[in-house]
Amino acid sequence: MIPYLARVLVKAVVTLFAIMTVTFIATRFSGNPIDTFLGEGLTTEGRQALIDYFQLDQSLWQQYLAFLRGALSGEFGLSFVDRRPVTEVVAERLWPSAQLLLASIGLTIAISLPLGVLAAVYRKSWIGSAVMVVAFAGYAVPAFVLAIGMILIFSYWLDWLPVVGSSTALHFIMPTIAMSGVLVAALTRFTRNAMLDVLGQDFIRTARAKGLGEMRVVLRHGLGNAAITVISVIGLQIAGLAAAGSVVIESIFSWPGIGQLLVNAAIIRDYPVLQFGVIAVAFAVVAINALTDIAYALADPRIRLGQN
Amino acid sequence: MANLTDAILPRPSNRTGNDRNIIQKAAILLAVLLAVAAIFAPLLTPFDSLEQSLLSRLRPPLGFERHAPGHLLGTDELGRDVLSRALYGLRLTLALAFAGAVLGLLLGGLLGLVAGLRRGWVEDLVMALVDMQIAIPFTLVALLVLAVMGSSLTVLVLVLGIAGWEQYARIVRGEVRRIAAQPFLEAARTAGSGPLYTACYHVLPNLISPLVVQFTLALSNIVILESTLSFLGLGVQPPQPSLGSMVGLGRDYMPTAPWIVLTPALLILLLTFTVQILGDWLRDHTDVRLRDR
Image (tube, rainbow over all chains, first blue to last red; front, side, top):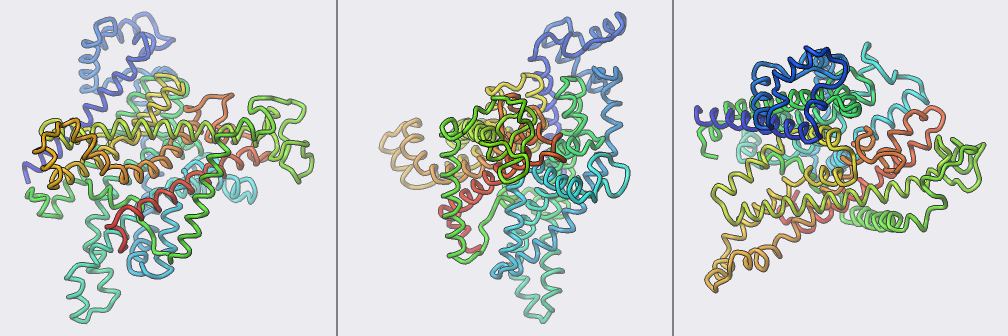
């Protein structure tokens, strides 16, 4: 277990380090760091303090070291717009994003697990085909097209749902559905394939042979064993997909989360916010991936003991 | 990790042979139509995609009240012909997607080939990069890069190319390792074939069919990424039309002039569905392992 844990942690740290380096290089590529990292509207002392802290007048290498040192102590610079530490700006957006994310993942699981199981059990009949067509469509429809279509129908034509804001339960409906589209496609497919693998195993035949009902065989023995792989895919794939999706969905519905913040920062070129936002989201995804890897290993001795 | 990614990739469904045939033929026909429309857009479009006509702004498509003659699908907020813009947008979207997909294929294919042939630390390094690419939510990196480097078409193609390279790298490396274990490669080596010759004449031909499948599937993802970035205002810049940016800019007029948004949005759907069906079909034809499912 210890070597496995070490490998997972090293991988996570290296990935984070790579992301920080990429964002550093990307923001320093665009020209003079004093312009791209400080922006307008600072006092002379404040300006000098930032230049000294991040060593912006030094060589690129020293800037990089100063950036890493700042990152370790939680200093990522000030937002161009509201002249506050970017960590504060991003932190405020955390909860709305998390709400939308949790709602979407909840909806995705509620739809995908039953659909995936159905598609596996009835894979030779029209039910299986119908489910796979839905999953297929989910991949082909971009989230923003889905969102725009829903807004057009449910907000402008039928006038049932509000377009912008996040205050009431009604506000959650469209963003949650729009964000879940591609997640449902991914998770349904995955659940189906995991179920197909499990349902072909010998112990399923044994379960049937000892006279268990079909329901119990499929749900208890089938889904029970497929669950480990399904949960791991939620951690490994769905987290990343959702992070990307939130950028689009939040900016369409003016959802006050990190995704909208990042798109706005990209459009008005607020580099410090953009840089820290990307690092923060990447950190979340990498952390979820690492936790999933560890949970997966705890559940599966073959991985834990390094035989796979 | 590798198994997980494989398992959520599209798998063929079990429609009866006839149904599938019809859908596939329709998809091929549509693909040809879309390609022709994109390639010959300058000849097919009744108007210039940038030509404004402020006297006939926000006119609805043919068959509605206040329709402006000649503008089949209506006009936008500056009086530009929606159909012409959509066809030019399709052209640009497809061109960008192809350029991006080819770049990804070259980049990923080369890295995968090197990883599979050289093994050792080179392979470890490439696979570590692949893992990293999978772990990073790429849309965010794309935002950062486009904001920093500006949304020129060159930068956009680079971003779209880097978006999917890791899939090619994984496929090529896997195939190369499989092929490397085959007797004919041993024979070629014994006959004095050098590494480069082996790669080009013995390994590459075996890679073509999995790569064609991956290319087609990736194309649809790249179309979605490009449209999304342009929709957000970070991809193709106005006044140049792309399908995504037309939807993004038309949003403000949705309550009164939905056709501005509907035309490009439906074209995007047509494009992604067509390409996905083609990719699925190619996969069915080339991947024996999936036939039973």
